[in-house]
Image (cartoon, rainbow, N blue to C red):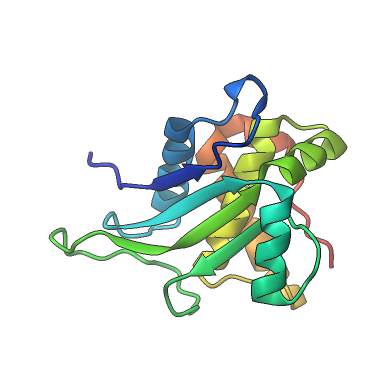
Length: 172
């Protein structure tokens, strides 16, 4: 089975404890998530792992919020919610549907606060970002419930049984 190509950028100035976040691992869990979400094999995402200051700059520039955040998604597709992104044609050139940017510093703080592993929090944020790329949102109650359920299932596809301990309840 052919794996999709996922571009990963890890800020070289970051100090990541014990090299817990590796490009291969990010690509594997991304592939699992996108397969679960029925994204066509020729579609992938870019992932950027960065620091709080870069996230603050991006958040201010794109959303007008002058503070850091944990994850941002920048979509290259129209945000139309669909149950399936599959495409039956296998000869279509690769397409990047968007980018997910994660603050490693914020992920570390949140992992400690949630009493989960650092990798589990990164997977949580990556799944959350991917769902936003695909047009899902959690502003309205019905949308929030749908996205939380899909987030749980996506995390399971990424981490297996380890995901069962991760609470997926967005703040209402």
